[in-house]
Length: 376
Ligand SMILES: *Cc1c(COP(=O)(O)O)cnc(C)c1O
Image (cartoon, rainbow, N blue to C red; front, side, top):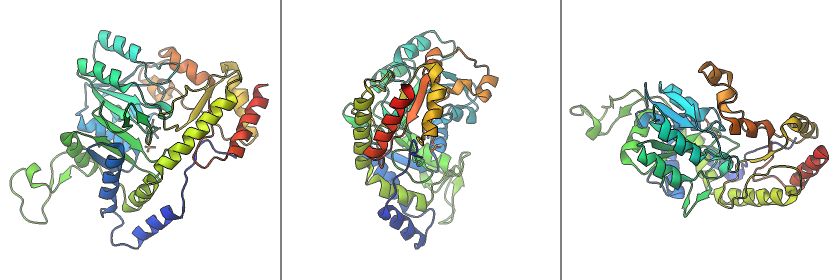
């Protein structure tokens, strides 16, 4: 089976992890701070907090913004459930803004009209860079500033991609950017995530939230330190730490990120060229995208048969995403079919084709040929 996504791990990655195993620290050593600086440096952001998943990163980003009971978070229904679950962890409520059918990202016009007319405006917007293609962050920032809405970029798909003159993650047009290092993402630490920001205060809150709310910084303490052993818990936090093993893998992977993205971009362009004449809706070409996934749309009534036939032929297709508001858990909160029609229409025809750095042209040709046969 050719999978839809796959990590690319080489001997240097393996050596980096084995080295840590021979060291004094398996966790809370020097690898995590080194990974954090490398990430901040790569993306062009001031600070990075590495944590044990992208989901944890979303949670602490919301905590850092003070999201809580009575607050709302808005995001796109075409994302992984973590993009909205983070609000519920904080006791806040969730609403969605429908997508732009061309970019498949949150629709800026719909966001504008919803902000203009909403009874309760959100405290936080999570802008998801679907498939690795950046949202229109400049327009989103302008809008959100007008209504005093904080912006978190969910760049779980976007690491290594570009937006305007900067890297995705530089957080020029947002308060924070969240990354994921799950094995199907741009780089992997097996499990892992990070929050990037240029705001020292938000960074400090992310650090606290991910480490039990504990500090050893005298300036943050209530009263005097009682000695070198002393620490204080000043807020309620979690243990969301990344281990040094994971961070070492992340550092080693990051050094190859540009090559991975270059390869993903080549393969995406090659899909475009080979599929252009078929009765399909293709993703919009985007040379700045990190190309996390390549999602085509077929007629809704042909999707299941096409999906099954591709799987039968050994092509590990997938579907990204089932709209979050249609999940049973979210229906219990009051959402229903018809709430976000463009997202639902997109989902009905979506098929994710294999795309990852190690995919060969021969494998990609097999995907294309099988798809041609299936659609004929
Ligand atoms: C993968 C992903 C996440 C969650 O990341 P984990 O590291 O798996 O917790 C969040 N949002 C989006 C859009 C993702 O693709």
